[in-house]
Image 1 (cartoon, each protein chain N blue to C red):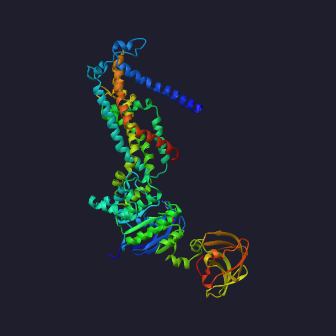
Image 2 (image 1 turned 45 degrees about the horizontal axis):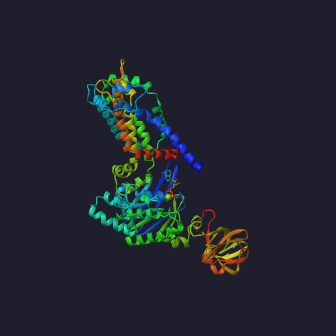
Image 3 (image 1 turned 60 degrees about the horizontal axis):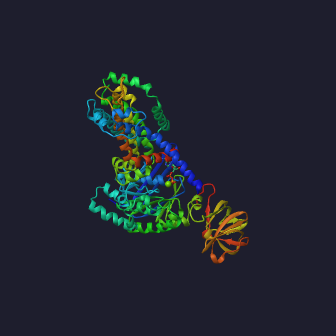
Amino acid sequence: MSGRGQVSFRNIARTYGNFAALKGVDFDIREGEFFALLGPSGSGKSTTLRILAGLDAPTAGQVLIDGQDVTAVDARDRDIAMVFQSYALYPHMTVAQNIAFPLEMSGHSKAEIGPAVHDAARKVKIEHLLDRKPGQLSGGQQQRVALARAIVRKAKLFLLDEPLSNLDAKLRLETRAELKKLQRALGVTAVYVTHDQEEAMTLADRMAVFMGGEIQQIGTPAEVFAKPNSIDIAGFIGNPPMNLIPARYVDGDVTIGGHRLKTDSTLTGERDVVVGLRPGALRAASDGVPARVDLIEDLGDTAILDLDCAGTLLRMRVSDIEIPNEGDTIKVTARPQDVHLFDPATKARL
Amino acid sequence: MTGKRLRIIAVMAVSLIFLLAWAFPILWSVLNSLKTDQDVLAYPPKLLFAPTLDAYRDVLFGSSSILPNLVSSMIISVGTTIITMVMAVPAAYALARLRFRGKKAAGFYVLVTQMLPPVGIIIPYFMILRNIGWIDTYQGIILIYLSFSLPFAIWLLVSYFEDIPFEMEEAAYLDGASRMKTLWRIIIPQVRGGIAVTVVFVFLNAWNEFLFAVVLSGNTVRPVTVAMFNFVSVEQTLWTKLAAVSVLAMLPVIILGVVAQKHIVKGLTVGAVKGGGRR
Ligand SMILES: Nc1ncnc2c1ncn2[C@@H]1O[C@H](COP(=O)(O)OP(=O)(O)O)[C@@H](O)[C@H]1O
Ligand SMILES: [Mg+2]
């Protein structure tokens, strides 16, 4: 018996009719890890999570939990707790009864259930709501009940499908931080589905980026942010995402708007490329590319500039002390190590 | 201000007219059931008279007591209701969860069967029951009633089941509940209102049914709706007794209405509000 909550997906495919929702997904989740499945809507994240939970069956491939093939194991017997996007609380039961339900189903005695329910409620700060019905709670409170119901059983895997998407922005940020602390404190393996790259970046130990039913990249948020594998990922990660500009590459240099920019690439020869530049990696320099400031989005401590660089839109993040005026022309450049290169045909990183 | 008050008065007046029109037959029955045989024939009708319970005593404990008929009606109605619900609840649940082609059309045809004129099918039903020797039996009448109440009950219940998101069942499943436990602990409690409404309608339909009962019943099994006409004969109509039986026959209906009032009103309005937006 290996650890608790270690997961392996072995070449999982899922088709609905002729439509391939998952095209061979293959990855591991380590014990105790906070693992995010990130990707745009419809990319197959929920399908992957539901296959792990046993709510959906793969057309091909295996799911292993702690080294054991559970592909054919019933959802009830997988020892998995899940928080649904809709929370799926039982409306006719009180909060306490909702939280107690999984324990009741696994045959715990009343004497065990009472303290366990209070303990779980305390961890998510809803002890004062135990006698209410879900319909009498705010969205944020309902979300906490769903969390409490999921953690009360101390399952070995904790699955969350867009659990914060129904909360308002402020509450989302607060809950996000608490969620991470909770997972740390419980030491449980968490698999977290989200389409919000910022959520995945802040929460996850590692993440898998889904695109069109396939995983395009797996790594820590920092790794994926630093070296996106493809144009699609580059355009998806970061807020605002990377500037992607078609350009000509010649022996280590690229030409943008008639201006040369050094890269750290060692490729020789000449070819078409797509250059990726993070808004935060652009900086002002007297020998940079001239660009006109079209629009300034002031975010308080930073600002996002929309630059017109010989007809190409470039977005640049600047700190509040260096905000120019709209209509000004500034000169921008980037360090060679900040210039990402992609193949326009295959979309892969060069 | 005055316009508003006028409107309220107008609404009240119209409501009162409808209430009187609706309540008149009931009042008529109640009043006549409390009169003597002389008072009931007086013209103009007496509104003030010495009330008596003679008619009730006669129809309940007299020579032609309708007590056995009330019992028959009760057995038929309760039997029909129980069997209908035991079969309709799982069927409606399954129907709500299943996806198959022609589901919508199936629902429509169920409704159409409810609109067939009963006289059109009463003869075949009579012949079938006669052939298997089920005329004038409880199982015969209940079987025929089931053929109406079951589709109706399923059709009514399906919409309540459809309102429960499937995710809730999946949550229960992951929480370790079996399919039966999920049905009993998660699903059924949420459709209690719908079940109450359905029980009331099925029971009342069976209790009030007359046309099939008159053809398919006999001397052993004779529900009160049929037996009532013992008091109407060629020579005379026993008005006070007829009125007393009417009141007795209405009593369960009124009691059920009062008891289940909350559920019925809620069930009907929920059905009405959601019905419009349903797929
Ligand atoms: N039961 C189903 N029947 C048909 N298509 C489905 C079903 N479930 C999911 N899909 C399709 O599979 C794709 C992936 O869905 P999903 O995993 O839910 O995406 P997401 O990444 O947004 O969670 C979508 O295009 C969706 O329409
Ligand atoms: Mg999803």
